[in-house]
Image (cartoon, rainbow over all chains, first blue to last red; front, side, top):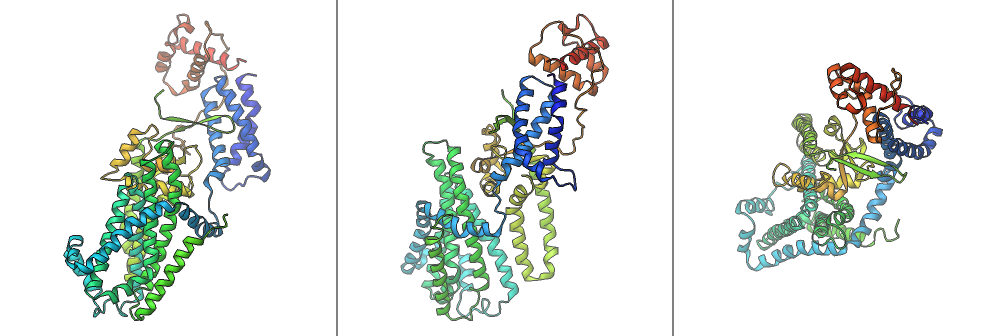
Length: 325
Length: 233
């Protein structure tokens, strides 16, 4: 068989495959044609190999190659893409895959928690005894601004805040806090140092603020405000930090594989943690914008609500998705 | 061979070739996206101003979506290409040539924060220049590559698949290796795109086949040889 006969013999099959894969506008490929795609693809693979081996003309080989590429896209793309597709699949990811993955990576979670909560709690305790130490950690301007925000006699935070402002602050928390989560992961690319710096830095800053405000007697307003959203927000940050540490660890200690391969393996579960972290931070933003700002509620109610939220979040991470998929 | 082609073996028993895109092509696509996103960002305040303070919140959320998630949505839902990439005929695919999915796209776009440091994507550019497949850090972590794609509406239309042999086939004066045969076929196929002078100039390179012919006669002879080769068994 020569080249022309070869092309003529298979022409119908090739154009049928091309039509099925990239139908002209307004045409829906018939189910029979769709079912035929894998078989036609396999035969096409053989024909392309023959055309290459016999050094047929380039335009023919290019055409078969392009056809093979789009068939590959269509056949294996559907699998590789793994589109969540349905709300049910997304929900399953969040309530099951995410907490299970978080527990599997508990070492990184613990390291991230240590890097964040160490300086945070240390700052709070230290400032009860050495309040002036706060000026090493926070600039006086920032401190003055925050101090005025949480002053007990301040009405700006009070009932005067309307729904408009709640939405505004919600947008701000999303942009700011979720972006910090994303940066925590990316910081892992510098052998984890970027992530560590973010965790320790945020821990020291928040510890300094909390400790200072408590020490000067603003604890009532401050803890009342942060109680509701603190659990999902801080845990979200720790989860994001853990994902960054995983990236860093893959680069520092790849084990028995190349760094690129280690990065890819760890990267997948780091992305899972980060999805969860971003969702938790978003949830925290909802609470922070629409619940925490309600200063008319009594202090005890806010603390109790915060404790309930914390309990729910921790229980979810500890128990969610144990039964597997 | 040093080139930007990446062969991928398929389970069906054939190899496909991905044409990897380098830093310049990708920077151009990024610039188009940047311009688009910048224009939308500048238009947003006007669009939300009627909502007052709540509009500020909507504005911030839109900025977040536009600058963090815009590439992810486009890459996953629009055949691996943001509008800028589409305009430049680029696409993001997994290393095995399959379309990029949510986890990979999300990861490579989050890692952008590291790639853009310290200024102007310096880290990403360094990684791309060190890597044989032009992958920035995000691509390395997600296992993706950016490839050139055949344009949907090519500026130069592909010629007819099988040009009818116009000449009586002539057997080559010497025996040709498969690659040489391919070169001769290629010549005949691309011949219509050249001026007669250029065609003659190129034909005369194949001196052993021409037995001293030059100019238009050389072209005719080479095409006749090609016509013979098409019919080889």
